[in-house]
Length: 207
Image (cartoon, rainbow, N blue to C red):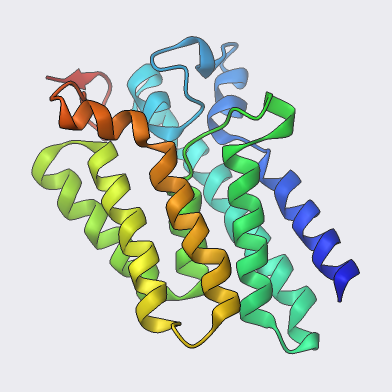
């Protein structure tokens, strides 16, 4: 069991190092980290290159999260711990996305990967996360506000639907805290009225 945990966690972590924004910007002969906020995430990519090129970023970041959950689920299902294994895979790929060793431990903030992890672990929670983000962003055009509220919904969702599984909570609640922590700068700017609004369906910013 210990060997399966270590190998699965390491494999999914390394999978998380595959950063969509960095990969696609490299294909464009550029580096997303040299633009905007310098963050290797979807929002900064859209601000820098436009939404039309973001589909590849979404495909990579969503795909790696889905693949990690599937791999971990397959490994642990014969042991009777499929959901717990998927949590391990999901948390590991999220850590790889946020703290990628190949990028000097400076990656994205994890909201897209976190959403896919939630969706694969429990579609009800994934749907709640999506709805919360959509409403918050739709009303304010602040991606960061939508992301923070969606991360909070992620944690609350697992508390509601999986309160009787301490192993699931041991993985998902820290992941919720991590995503919110990664948005600490955005939270500060929101409080002080300095955060930028973003058009997720085009290029450029709104004031």
